[in-house]
Image (cartoon, rainbow, N blue to C red; front, side, top):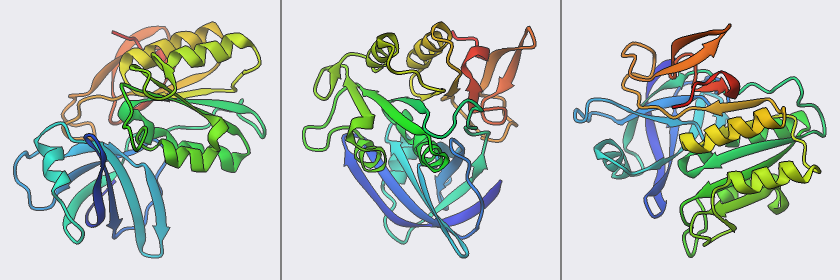
Length: 272
C-alpha cells in the first residue's frame, strides 16, 4: 500500500454519468486483478473521505505506472474528480484488498465466464488479460440498465478488442443493446444448453446479480468468485464500515471487504 500524488493524464466523460480517468503514478508496484485504490483530488478537504475505485487498466513504466479508472459520478467526491483536468493531481492510495486468483481448474483452452453488471465491469478487465496470458478462453457476460445510442455500454468496446466480438455477450434491462433483461438470463441459458461448461465464474456487479451467479454456480457445480461492492471509508480495515457476513469452517463470521476482500468465494458469502 503506497500513498502517492499522481498526475492526471486524461479525464473525460464517456457517456451518461460514466467517466474514464487515466493518471501517472510515480511509484512502481504490482497490481493484482480486482484490487482497488482510494482516490481524492489532491488538496481537496471536503469531502474528507476518498472514493474506492478498482484498477481498470495499467501500463507499467520504468519509474512508475499509468493507471486507468472507470467511475460513475454519483456524489460530491466523484463530481469533484470529474472536474480534474490534464496536469492536475490526484491522491492515490493503493493497491488495496485481495483481488482475483485464478482457480486451479482453469487451464489452457478452458472457457471461463466473466459476469459484470453496470460499473462492475472494470473489475474483470485485468483478470481477462491474465486469463488470456494463461491460455484460457474468457467470455464476458455484461449487463446494464440501458445503453447509449452512440456508444453502447461502458468499457464493452475494450473487451471486444481484447476478447473478440463473439466472446462478449450483452444484456440491457430496456433491450436497447443485446438481450432484454438481466445478464444472468443469457448466462443461465448458456449453462443449461450444456455446450458451455466454464472452468470458473468470476463476477462483479450489483448484489442481486452476484447472488444469482452464486446460485447458478452451485447448481452447475462451477467454482465462482465474486468481487463485492461495499461502502468504504478508509479502504484498509480501520473503520470497519464494510463488514460482510460470511460462512467459513461451518461458522458465520464478519470480515472486512476492503482487507479480506473485495474478492470472495461465492459459496462463502451470506447474501442479504
